[in-house]
View 1 (tube, one colour):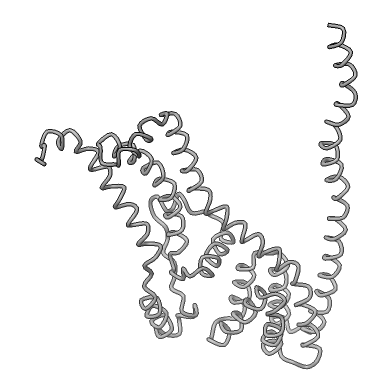
View 2 (cartoon, one colour; view 1 turned 90 degrees about the vertical axis):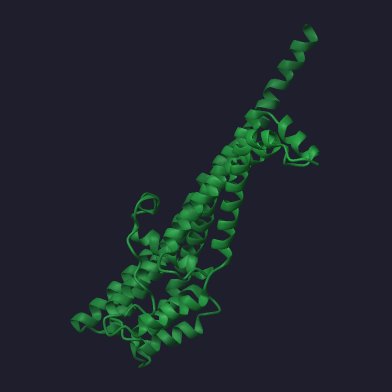
Length: 321
């Protein structure tokens, strides 16, 4: 079998496109799979030993995004904090994990069209098996464009949708369990325990019912024990939770400690407000139910009503003509 230089020169562009697709695929797989955990631990140790000013609990500061990453990352700090927390839960603890997430999302949006058109180029160049190349070449061009567009949209919006759905589900679990955790915290403080020991106790007791709140309370205590300012740690915990109840709770605790008021009285008042708020939320949900049911019933009943009303007319019309 001899090497045909003219054939290679004619198909050089297709070879380059196929090589680019292979490089993009290998780079994406390498970014997702090869994470240097030893380097992450070394960065954490360096952050702990960098002096009194480093009170971020082994978390390096995130650098400001530049260029394309700046245009992709949202401006809402609460949303960024939630995304960073969810990425940390799946193993991405890097300071720039949010930027990497959005860059990977962009890569997933660009890669499917490259694969589609790269496969078409390989089929045109004769580098695919005969049967596969025939299927690709016989496929309509409009169909290829539609597949590329749909997969690009799925790659771009899919990771964000899945991550946001997990964030919303976590926030809902926190809202449901937060009044109970606050009641336990109030009982612990009224029993004579300090705020730190009460939070640690509640975090240890509630981990089976609400692991999200237990994680946040124990993380807060670890940060305070490591020397971080309590006010900053409280508001960071509320920011990670992403619910208004946690932000109000942090504000109540900080103001009570700052002005020297009774922490027991503040917790008792806020716990009563949380119970009332939970009852009002349940009533609001119950009041919305009839409206939602009426919409569903109308969609289910109207076709049957139209069918019952119009069927005799259609039968009579067909019998006459």
